[in-house]
Image 1: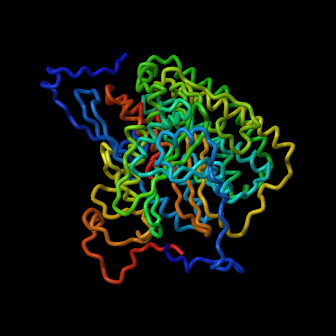
Image 2: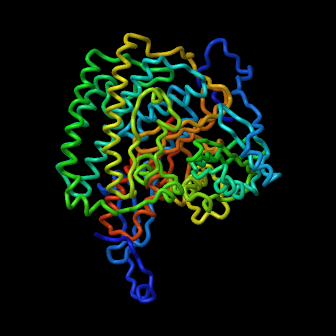
Image 3: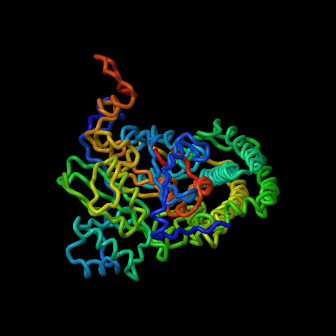
Length: 202
Length: 380
């Protein structure tokens, strides 16, 4: 976590008090979850419901099989990948998380899948299941730095090819820092000593 | 009519004289700073790659370092021709995770403004798309009506483009005197004006040649590519988030979802034209209901510093371009832990490759227009 000391805190709110949490309900008795568990006994690590959205944590190795099963199964019918994104959680044991939002047109249901990744671990690509994942995985690779195994064309999507670092990681500062790309392309010959490039906003 | 077909034979491959053409980023028909790298055989596109990111500001990173109230203005600048829709998505997401109630009256005003924004966005699309193809008159006509909406926005929001009066928990302002008359006056003129556009376009031979059968996307392909919004509906999928997951007061108004049959550029045009008519009907119904609620509060009870409980939420709305979604992870502080924006333009743009291969270079211009992208949203 980065420091937020300089930001205002309201009166009477103590920093040590644990903030409230959204109710997390164990997901049981869902017919599709039961089918999924029967087919892949070790794939579902956790199944909960948060704000009405079923959220499943899936083992990394089996994510592509699980996604293909959910797409093709005649009861699940998740034929649409709404969103795919990644998150950096530095304090967690597995610091990277890939989040999938699936949607089923025939049933009008959304599900969320999660895959936790250790440092340096690659996530299997689901481009073979939904083509929509192509650019979303490229964006996750670009901004968070999660590699996707089996992606047909894993390049940076938004940032330049030779940019250094992945901005959405928590250790990447919001303010400007030295990047070789900037020196090469923005015609910055040298960084003068003591110059404030941060563009800090308070 | 040009048929999309490339037969790859041995002779053809041997005689190939492929050319790589760079289109954009400074090209008016790319609607901003989109760079498309085209691989051509003669004038036929055989491969295509989009280079985006020229407008990347790192909005998601900025959001992690701003309070929930500070974030909102950044959303105006995503899809800058539909700022109201973006704001609606953001405030609803925070309301959903923090459990903040919105007064009934504010919901109706929000829907009226959002639907006006949808019409404005579609009018801008119609004008620029038609101008890309060569019909300059339509551009002037469409902007004439869009001006009326922008005048309403100027009166209500105080801004024409970056309209920002939606607040977490309701609205900043109540409606001004004469709001209803001004909106009703606009709704009165809209149908005949739409008819005017259709007189020019619907049976225009050049328009038909440039749009019918161009860039066909079947329903299966569209779903596979993650396409949403009018592009998906033109492919024959009757799906609209306003019906599938009703937000605000969309479950209390009646409207139809227009769908196309062939999924070509012409159908996408027809779907958007019909959507404007449906939006007008929604506005009229909301105005009737708003009358009964006036006067009333427009801002609910909101804590001074918004600290949503620890957790995560995904919320999406039907923006003029498609499904605009926000995945928000809260860590219990006044700053979001992660805020992911699912931009409809970006994901619809992925389908350009599928649509364009086999067509001519000039058709790529028509296709970029028909997807209706805004680069501020694609790059974020």
